Image (cartoon, rainbow, N blue to C red; front, side, top):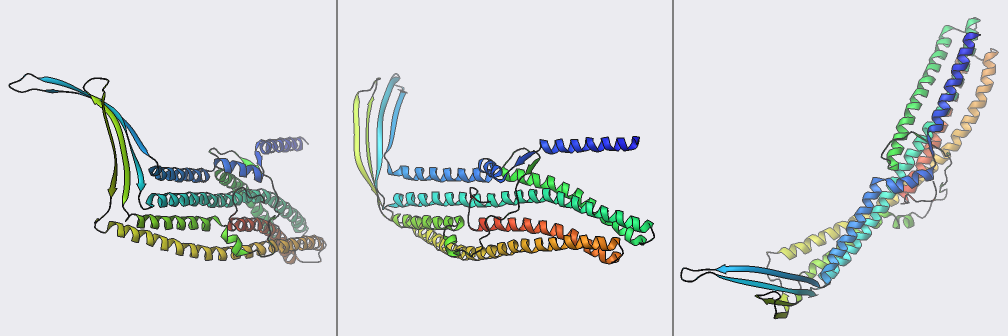
Length: 427
């Protein structure tokens, strides 16, 4: 009785300890994970900074269209001397303002500004594409942790089955109704189930770290997730793939890059045009501060390329080659996206239907196991037949869980293939 009391107290203590540990862990929903990733993921932050860079580059290019105004001021003292005359010191002061204005450059700068605008669009589409990748990786990590948590429950259930089987076989072995091989097999099955439980607990830690990374957290904190295995976006009817492709961020990014290349080609052709610039200035100069001598200038400057060793022709050829390359990349990407969408849609349908099949198989196997256990206990079936049915039950439990997780992963891949970003409303 004393030993039983000690064991009971130990069990209560350990149960309370594990309960407190689980209670201390942070429990996150899918929406919680999305909010953190949107705020902290380094890939998204880097993509935002790329947009800012392209916006600044456009402003730099467009600044050439505005007047360039400079103010200047100077003060100097000089001394001259010779063998026949004493040294003379002279002061010089001046200040003023000057300005230049581009009047005409064959629309080169205008084309460069338009190219920069398309580059901004390309960087914005790159942000969308990055967001789709972040969502896929985040959803995968979330599902992996959800599956790892559920796997512990399933494995504990399998341990219960294996332990119950061992108890039954032990009784029959001690009664002389079963051979030693059956007993050793039952013990091995229980040991295998206990190992799988320990393995599943280790998988929890790995899945937690993966989710921590995908949320963009800088420090690791043990966590749990809450959710179910329901597929929200089954897409039972095949959608218009061509329509989906047109809005895909990877294709939109290439289109923007192609448009930018077209404007860059026009800019390269405009490089052959003369450049007309206006200049004006006014200043005061004198030998005392403040100087009172007035000076001003106003004029035009015209420049025209005549010979540069084929530089501008090579620039046109380079711009044309880039444009041709991007046109073909766009066509290739469009065709590839259609195939990818068709493939991921088919994979989603297969995964969803597999869940239904495996569920029916699990229900049938559980029912068969109940019947077989009663038959084995009364001697109506042999150990070999019974253990096959029990093995099928164990396999059916893990297979059903894997099918559920695979369906969620297939859904995540389908959503990513459609080009949906992190903020996509559905799971």
